[in-house]
Image 1: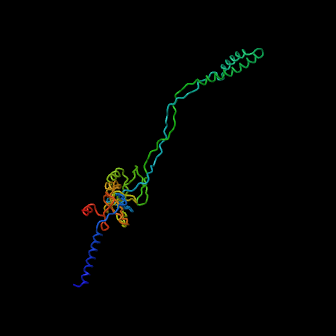
Image 2 (image 1 turned 180 degrees about the vertical axis):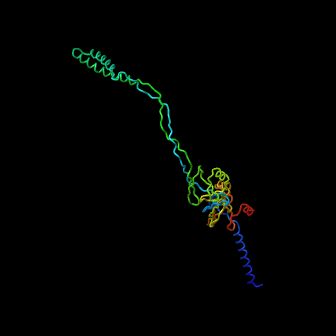
Image 3 (image 1 turned 45 degrees about the horizontal axis):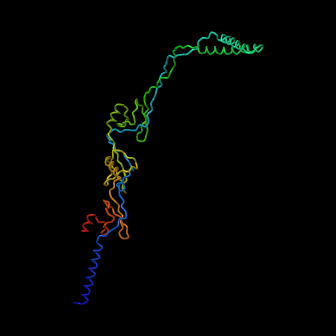
Length: 314
């Protein structure tokens, strides 16, 4: 055999063996150190759709209901009425001695007697006169007070005119239809809505009550933006513009119970974001379960599952 051919085969075999060894080495699992583990909650991955437009969808054959914007009572002034009542009156008792002569005289006598007991000679005379004057003044005042306190009471009937209670004769009802306001007279307050049948406002009280009791619930076509597209969904209640609707499995949630369940579970942990170091590179992976150790097994750039790690180790 050619010597050079033998040498080439040997070199080729060595190269193939080395390449296979390198390939096996690259495919073998590698240990990566976990740098951090952060919980991922349902709220962090929840999708929403924003409401941009709402249109009422009503049964064409059902009565329409227009909005009442104002109700003004029309009043008729009440007639004046005479109101009478018994009133107890207090009167001053008649006075026989209007000038209080008796009180003045009695006071002057007493005052003169008391003044006469003061001093002597001319001083006694002066004191007597002064005592009489002062005593007369005091006596007059005492008699005045006594007369003022003498009263008597009588019961008298007094009457006055009072305005009667106004009576309501009807109502001016202002309603809005298609952006225009109109006023109609009604004999009762209709409330917040009026039925519109065949283009005519229903004003009969019993008929309004019947139509309102059998009112067909309106549905609403709700237009929303989710992702890069716009779509719509039928809902029984009209959400406000800008409301964020829950999206579950690619569908807008319209069931109140399902929405309440999603809202209540927003804090639940659904997965974990694991950051690990492999060589000089930092990588991240989402894991359904929290790692039990501080390392991960990585093969061909992919984090191995727990059962896969066990089978490899075996």
